[in-house]
Image 1 (tube, rainbow, N blue to C red):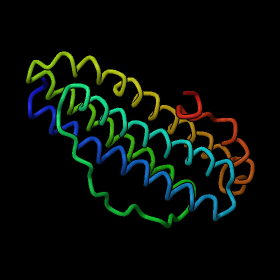
Image 2: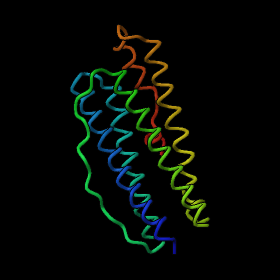
Image 3: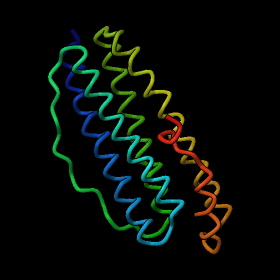
Image 4: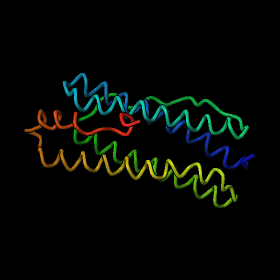
Length: 166
């Protein structure tokens, strides 16, 4: 059994993971509508990956015999100024999720919950990868410039998301 404090913060993370999925889904739909198939494919894959992360938290709580709370999700934005500002939002959001995961590690440490601390390490590593990938995307976008967005979109087809690797 895990502490109530750990169970509570894991349930809060479920909401964050499913919101992340909806956010990336909204971004994918926008990119698709704007005619960016490479960008939209990457974002659709990210949306699926975040959804699977939410399920991992659900299953972990069930495995340790804790209550799971299915959250109500707020509506993500549906319109974005441009591709670059959208990917800046992706990076900011991934940094927010990294901080949240670090908060879980902190609570695990404070409550001596080594079992959950071990389990959450997957997400600690995952967030390093997520932030690095988005920084690479932003670097490529900066190199391409706004006049080469067509070529950048084609390049996005070569950037594999972690979801497509699973």
